[in-house]
Image 1 (cartoon, rainbow, N blue to C red):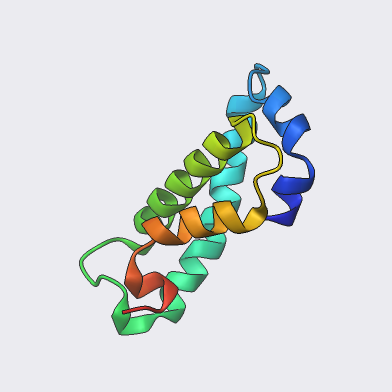
Image 2: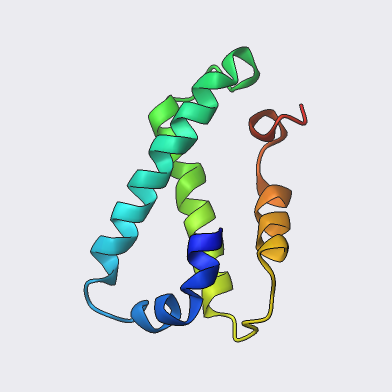
Length: 99
């Protein structure tokens, strides 16, 4: 969150660059690797019917979409806490440890 927050103005400007598509895919893939590790660490709490890689990619893609929306918002004073709360509110309980 600190990385994105500290570079928010730059990231907002770069979203419309033609190379942004590749950067987006790279970001989702990198984030998905961490999400996959988190899913695997949850053991039986994670859904057993879903492919872990697909599930991690889906969650990472949604998270990056929400982060992108936040970066595009004009309120640069919105704290990291705001986006963390927004992200946690849409995460499955079994992933964040609430279930």
